[in-house]
Image (cartoon, rainbow, N blue to C red; front, top):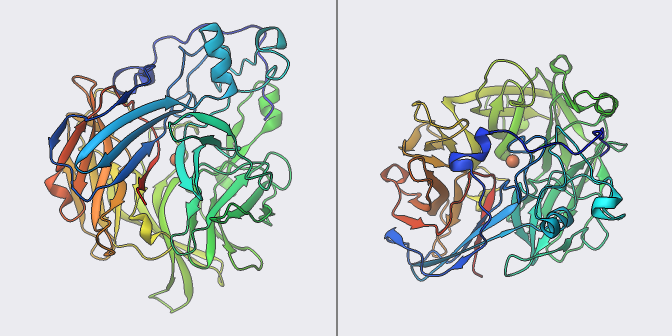
Length: 475
Ligand SMILES: [Fe+2]
């Protein structure tokens, strides 16, 4: 990506609410066994919860745009036999390593894209932009990957050490999105990648053995657009293309790189996984950061073959698109590939984000969507969630657990290894106290989430509010 270069290195950012309170970055990297547990960890819970998120290695210079800026930090809680241990490590990109050599930040933030020259960082990194593999962390086919937004991911070692960038042995050179979907039936990892030059959107499948299909263009995309998440069904790859376009020319002349053009509407691409032309379905404008899941179904209205997509719907991509404050709501879209139509319903008038399901059901109908939500009380810091919610997709009932003293993150499902029943297991999330800024891992029984955590695992260092993670069972 090309970006305007500033005439001189910008100074430190001023006070920034996203660098304070539960957002305050940590710099200590620790390994601590036998964590203090309030309550009791389930004896059958055996594996590791990993989470990624922005955590600048040094005080940022120029600007800091949460959650897009920052270096990645991986937090891992390993659980076995009712005990837990913790480790955290930076994702050490070449930029982080170079900054560690000099002891301060060298690259500016996204909106002050200072790119250091060869005199400061050497010829290889001169003019480069900071890499941001701080969004998600997944395990697939023996690879542990820290994911950026449509770039090559960084491969992570067993001690959370950063290895090299991973192009899947050269098969996927442009990289993948931060929200690939791993099909629990086939083991395939399906991903897209947007590009600034044609083809503007491609998709690929990485098999469990590491072989991958060459990235294939998604026909019908005429401009580069920002797309954050996706979904799969057994038959389709589902990609929602909202009119948040990249405007490279504007960025080069000092304008905004991203242009929200709501007159263009939102389109949904249904890409047959088995081959065949893309089916585009058009609708009025809406935005989504995150999907919960999708599945193939018969339309209850007319019996047509449709795709059902559950997601969090936003009127526009806050905070990128300017305008009054907006909120996201759980929503369902029924997409008819033959008719090219979309029928959307806000499932519940409850605000939220970070929707997740029992990932064993990814691509098939799921009984429950979990997400982070709010109690409605003012929080001491912006964009904090202080409750979790579970939406029963059959009955429409929403179950809540509120914790107004805590900032909670994305709920992630850890299945009970002794049961194949849907939603048998526990929901995990990191939570940070507004009062002490101390963090815990909460373990909430899926059978009765309203009862709250059965265990709160005390973290030895703060886990700043961050982004996405996954449960990786011991197998
Ligand atoms: Fe995300």
